[in-house]
Length: 98
View 1 (tube, rainbow, N blue to C red):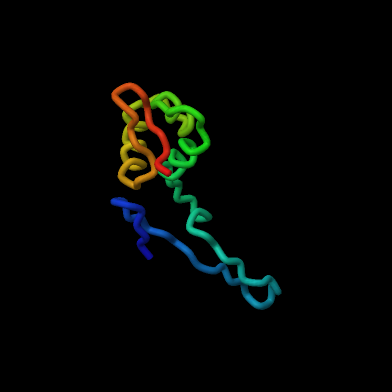
View 2 (cartoon, one colour):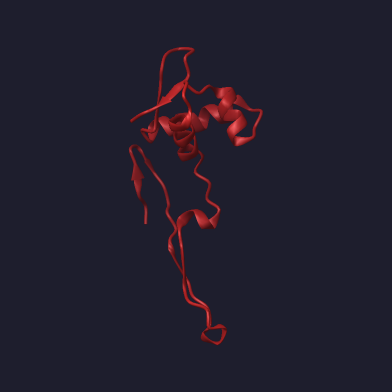
């Protein structure tokens, strides 16, 4: 399954974990995130929604636990492509799109 979020399409893994009948455990439905696929661009969108002011690269570096602004910039760009945030102005940062 390949859902889309604006310009970004991503692989979504869903399914059910079934155990042998000898264990007597009911099947467990697994969401895509349970497989460890971190979608940082979604996290940035949620972070921007919760923030009362525009977010900056330093905030995103802290969010994703990196010291590389280029990596943070890459993920912000993906968040913009997904339609979750928009740039306010040259040095104003990014805000969530409602």
